[in-house]
Structure formats: structure tokens, C-alpha cells
Image 1 (cartoon, rainbow, N blue to C red):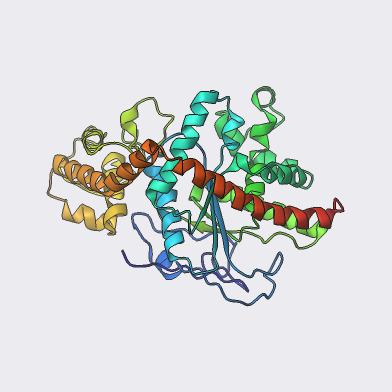
Image 2: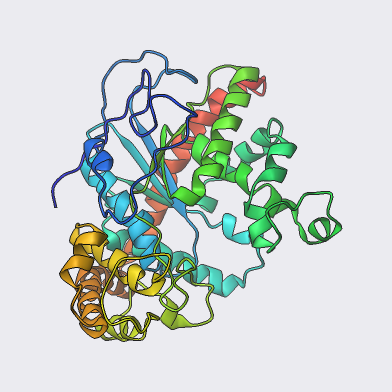
Amino acid sequence: MATMRISIARHGANPLRPASGNGNFTYFRPGVAQPSKWHQHRSLSTSTSTSPSPAGPPIKSPVIFSGIQPTGVPHLGNYLGALREWVKLQDSAEEGTKLLFSIVDLHALTVPQDAKQLRTWRREAFATLLAVGLDPKRSTIFYQSSVPAHTELMWILSTVASMGYLSRMTQWKSKLQLPEDASLEDSEARAQLRLGLFSYPVLQAADILIHRATHVPVGEDQRQHLEFSRYTANSFNHLYGDIFPTPEALISPAKRVMSLKEPNNKMSKSHADPKSRILLTDSANEIKKKVKVALTDSEPKISYDPTNRPGVSNLIEILSHFEGVTCQEIASEYETASLRSLKEHVGSRIADSLAGIRERYLGIMDDKSGYLDSVAREGGEVAQASADLTMRKVKKAMGLA
């Protein structure tokens, strides 16, 4: 795979955002596994210039932060949409770029958790980050809960965060299965809503800002949360001085991977049918069986039509991620082929691509030397040192030190 470069501008327009217009993040063309704009901007520049950015303090070097919840072994959608992109960022980042990737286990507490299950899921998620290719010698990998400053900063940011802004966020509404226009005026919403779920975006902002992150790789569905973090950083800076950079989004080029059983919905571990998703630790045989029974349709020819043929289109999109060609090219190649042959190829391609991850994951989980725990401990120490530096600046600016 050719090295891809993201050029990050510090003094002016972000190349991943439009140069003019309403300021929305760049949207990538559907069906293209690696859009050209992503190729053009995949290098993290580490210029020694320290001129001020448009908002926030001077930025000497990029700091990249992202996190994933501990729900056990991630699925294919998590990998293509986030984890694989993290590894690409790590492997292409220039010297001086600071990379932090976290198992955000405190976020998991917005719903009740079984303690034993959560311990297992945390380890499984951490082992997966190592298995997909994150290198502890290059990236800081840690559990969110091992760095108390995340929650300390959350409280401080809560003093500047807007209740009105939080009430308009979609996170708590979707979790409670409420309509998008639900508000705090609704008695049903008030009865179900807990403070932790409502203030989830404040903790997410603290995760990013505690390390003074300049860039956050996110999926398209997380743009709203990143905008809240930017808003909160600017609100704090306005009151107390330039402490936090205004973080920019690195939008993943990967189109959402949909459920194999309900292709109009995103692939999820919450779906009752385990055949709806492919886990990164599934065996080759399990993967092929799941793809074989994936919901498609009865039309004889292969075509790419997400609206009218979501099942077939989902398989084509998955294949495009691995083969680096457009969905239209795949559809043309398989136009006269049978659905069975397409499924066989997709299943084999996924299985071959994930085989190494599965092998490394099993080796890490079977390791008796304490490797996983030592990486987590060392990562936590590095992350804590990063967070302490920020908290010293924050406390001094606020008169707490």
C-alpha cells in the first residue's frame, strides 16, 4: 500500500475543510475506498514554526487523539472506519507527531455494566488495538480511567459548557430512542435521562483537550461531538486565555459498513443476530459463513445501487475498502457474475485480510508474560504526564495554582 500523506495547515485553512462556504467538513464521494483528497493530505507536517493558529495557542507539533469504547472485540465496521485509519496515521506521521489512542471505558458507564464483563471487554479491546498494528513505541495506548485528569478537566469544562448546546445533541436522544426533536421539556425525556449520558460530550471534549489535541480522526457521525469540543475549547480560551488548541477533524474516508442482516442499518454489536456482523477475531470459516447468508435480493445481475439494492451494495462497498477500487468498478467486473460468486470472493477477501489480526490477537490474549498489562501501564503513565502538563496550565490560568 502506498504511503498516504495528510498535510495539516497550522496558519490558515485546514486542507480537510472547504476553503470557503459554511465551514462544514469535507464530504467524501460514496463508493470510493480511498478518495483522492485523503491521498493528497495524509502527511502530518511538523514545521518548527510557532505562529498562532486562528484560534487557540501556538501549535508546535500535531497531537492526534482518538478513542474507542470497550465493547469487546471490535467488528469490521470499527476496523474500516476507525482502527485501520489510526494505524495509517501512525505509520505515515512524521517525527514529532504525538499520537494517543484510548480505550474510553468511562464512557461505557452511561449504561449499567456488569463489572466482570467490563473487565473482559476492556482487555479484549486493548488487545485488538495492538493486534491491528498500533505500536506502543510510536503511539500512546491507554485506558481512559487510568488518567484521572480526564474527569478532572470534565468538571472544569462543565463550568463553561452550554446546557442549550447539550440539549440539542443527538447522543442522548438516540441512546434513549427518542425522536430527534425531543427536548428537556418532554416529561419522557426527563424521566429517562441521566446526567452522565447528557454530559457525555463534555467528557469527550475533556478526552481531547486534556492532551491539547490538534487533530481527531472521527467518522462522519461524530462530527457533532467534535464541533462541541471546538466550541468548548473556544469558550474556555475566551474566559481564561489561550490554553487549548481548537481541534480539527480528520474525517475517515471509509463509508459506513452496514449490517449483513439489515443492510439499511449500520453494523453493530447490539444487533441480536451475531451473523449481522463480522468480528476481527472471527475465523475464516465463520467469516465466509456470515457473508454467505448475508441478506441480498433475487435480482440476477450485480449492480451498485445503495437505495434499491442495499444488501448487494454493502458487499460491494466492503470489497472496495479492501481492494482499493471504486464500487462502480467492482459492479462492472461482477455484472454478469452470480451473487454466490460475489459472496465467495467477499468472504475470502475479508478472511485473508483479517487473518493476521486474528492471529496476533490470540497470541496477545494467550501471552502469560503480562505484556498487555505492561503496555497499558506504561501508556497510562505517558498519558498522565501529558494530562498533568495541561492541568498545570489550566489551574494556573484559573487561579487554582
